[in-house]
Structures are given as structure tokens and as C-alpha cells.
Image (cartoon, rainbow, N blue to C red; front, side, top):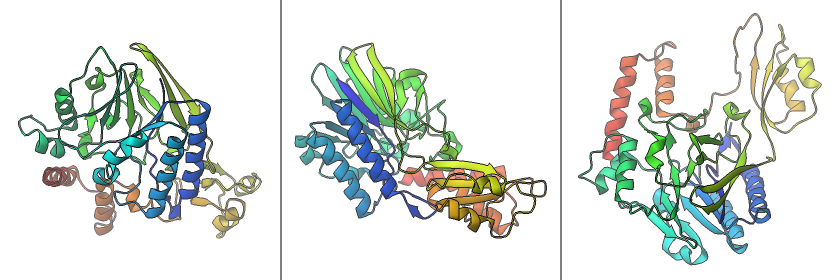
Length: 370
């Protein structure tokens, strides 16, 4: 069988208050075309379908259109919820839509959901889980970390080594490369060792936005289909095609994606930037003029109408000075928001290690009550 592995759609996401729904519509149409051209049998969507747990109607309509297009072509679709999704909303109508060949991770009850396919292939679905969720379902298990939680769930699964086992999972695997647009748990408590998944022949991962293998070709993050922060400017976005021929006989390859508008960093003298071709890409422009004109940003906006950030770096500033609004709160972690607030209240003094330890303790307690 041939699978198409994607993840981290983040439908409804914005950049600097600008809706990315047109860009997401464009890239999902492209993924549908790739699924048809590659003649895949099924599409694996490894979590973070939406940007928010309560997605706007437009984002939900876009996902409905995307999945419906795949089903009309005879593709099966497997979907799990990620940390940005509401597991209950994702699983709504899960039982009903199985008849259409769409399999969605259901509300977690302590068991790993499995779909048996032809040719001895089993597709397992592990939505994003927090330790507190697993504790409620498996009270006898000793669970402190995310790894404890995942291991406890996998121990309950009757995984047949004689079959070809594929897992959809949305977690942070130790050793992967991250970017600024992903959420991490305070203190790195969400790290999970790669060998936890040794029982699976292919692990379709979501959560990390850079496409990458983790220790083996068949333990892989598909990455997000679009660049969602300037830290991803150098990423090469793609979808992953997985050819499954048998146990130990799996080929993995990336098919590149071409966005409607790219996310880029440009820098140079103001005249040099103005000499560049007109572009509607999302840009962060850095000028090196010693005395840039006061309207430099406005000038650049003529050539780059989607200019999102503007900085000055010269012998006087010595560092980037972003004159636009700071990164939106929705893209920041809890610890970053706390640090911002603390600096605001304490003359730009950063919180101490002791402060951050208290924050970590409070967050753990809140998670335990969730």
C-alpha cells in the first residue's frame, strides 16, 4: 500500500493578524493533486488539524472540503487530534464517517485505537495525550511524564509483530529539530524517547514543523505544509509518500510543496532591497543603512506589500529593532507570556530561575486537574 503522510495543518492560523486561509486553501488543493498523482491508497493526518480548539467556521469548512475531495477519489483518510485541537470536536461523527473510509481518533478511553486493513496492515491512532488524561483511564499505572503516559497506553495494546504496524502519533520525540511556532511543555517534560515506538514499522509523526527523520527513516515528522514563523524561513516544506511492501520493506520519500506565498528573510541596504523584484511573499526585511529614512518601512511596503517585520541593523543599533508589533500572543508559550508580563512589570528585568520553577510547578498542578 502507499500512504501520504501529512501533519500540522493549523487551519485558521494567522501571521501578524493576517489570515492564512487563502494560502492554506491553495496548499491543500496541491496536496489533493499530489495524492491523486501518486495514486496513494490512504492519507495519514498526524494532528493539529486546526490552530485553535474552537476553530472558526471557515477553517472547518476548508477541512471538510479537503477530506471530501480525498474521499471522492477513493482515498481512505486517518486523522488524529493534536495539542492544538479539541479531541472531542475532532472525533465528532467519528463512528458515522467510518462508512466513508474516514477514520478519526475517538475520545481517549485508555485504549489505542486500531484499524485493520488488507495485506496484514494495522493502522494505530494515538492522539496527543497528556499524563493527566492517561492517569484518569489507567489509575494503577505510574505516570509522571509524557513518556510514562505513552508507554502505559502502548502496554495496553495487543500489537501483533507478525503484522505491519503503522502508528499515527502527535508528540515531541527527543532529538528532533524544532522551530519557534511549536508549543513545548515547561521543562521539556513532553520529551519521549524514540525507542518507545520500536514495535511499529512506520510512525507518522506530527507536532514538529520541520520535515525530518528521527533516528530512522520510518520514524518521521511530515512537518507543516506551510511556514508558520520566520524561524521556518529556511525549511523545505513537503509531504511524505510511504510505500509499504512488507515488514522491513518500506520506502519513504518527500514530495516538495510550492506555497502561494513564501515566508522569507531579506536584508541589505534600502536601495538594494528596493531593487529586488516585486513580491507578495511574507517578509521580514532588515536594512543596514546607517541613517535609514523615517519612512523606510513604508517605502519597502510598495515593493513588498506583505512586509510583516522590519528591522534596522547598523553600527549604531548593533541589534535587530523590530518596529512592528511583537509576535502574537497565540503563538507564544505560557512561559514566554509570563516572561513578557514580568519584564513589563519589572523594568525589563527577566524572571529568575526561581520564578520559572514556581511557574512550572503551577502549570503541573493545573495539568493534573485538567
